[in-house]
Image (cartoon, rainbow, N blue to C red; front, side, top):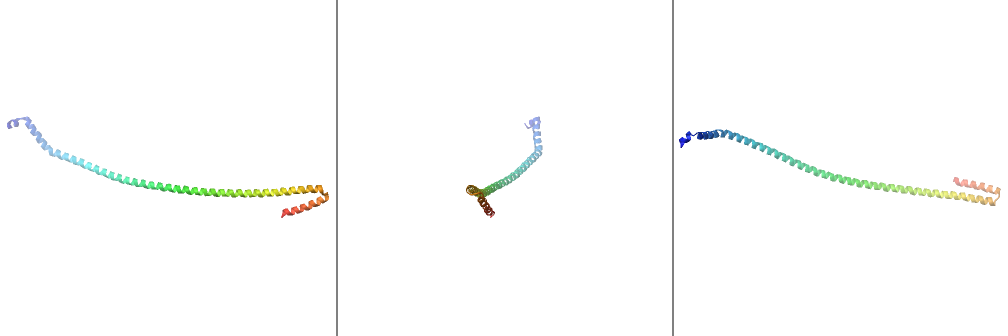
Length: 165
């Protein structure tokens, strides 16, 4: 059977194939291992870069969260300042309104007093004028012309001296 195998072309083809495989196995194996090692190295580098990106993203997230908290605090502070300023302005405007109202009240009271004084003066003037007219009419009807002129002149002098004082 061995002689049959040695003479068979299929046997020698199989042997040549096995020898070919054995001869090419080491270089192919080293090429495959090298390619796999390169792939592993590349994957490890990608993983390392991904971890760096992850760490950077986490740092950025922490920074963003801190900034968000600071921003929230700043917004609260601004709101508080705005509320206090609004309250201050409200109080100031209320005070100014009170002062303005008091000034208007004082001016109105002063005008009322002036009008009262003017009315009193006008009443006195009118009373004096009417009294003079009544006295003139009484004198005209009851006294003669000479006595009337003398009394009238004397009264006018007295009146002008009173009005000057």
